[in-house]
Length: 40
Image 1 (tube, rainbow, N blue to C red):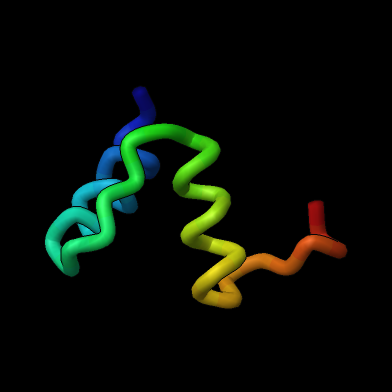
Image 2 (cartoon, rainbow, N blue to C red):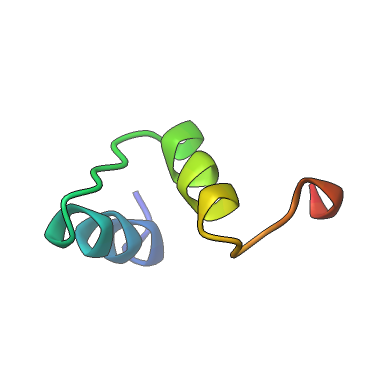
């Protein structure tokens, strides 16, 4: 697992929003407006 992804997962875990899979990370990014569906 890349360090970058591990750090992002850790940040979400610390705020009570775990994202244990790449799919859940994508969902979080969409929810938080980090990426839009048009960018995918």
